[in-house]
Image (cartoon, rainbow, N blue to C red; front, top):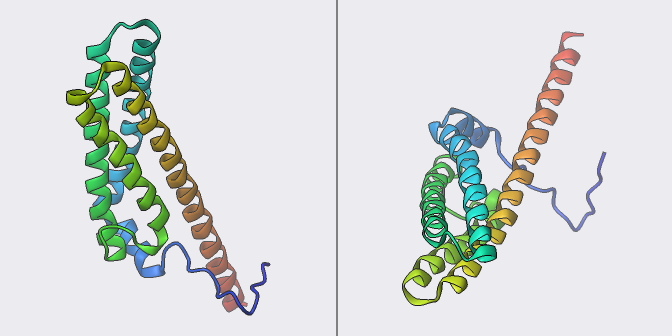
Length: 172
């Protein structure tokens, strides 16, 4: 059992019981659960195409289209994720439980958007390096969300275990 010092208040749970209920009942949770792996597959394909272009100089159009598709999928998951956050936490972005993930998501969005601008303003190699920078931040951000998903599962298991223990104690 962990002890909290007198100077540190206990950490807020990732979800309050009401937030957990809203999360579980929201169709946006399913949307996010579908879009996240789709985005990852699009990312892997695009990463391959970008690296192939940088290594061989061939396939610029395919790489460019793949980064544009990845960016559009990112925008879609960010918009639907914001709606999900509003449903669950009452805020479109920067809810306490996902504050740092949202902050980093803004960097991911900025780099993907910079790539779109670069298509019209910079040479092809620079464009692809911007795409790689965007993809590096995407991987970090995806890791943040996976860690948060695991924390939510563990928190749910602890609550379920505590409820089972309370029910067993009440039955005695």
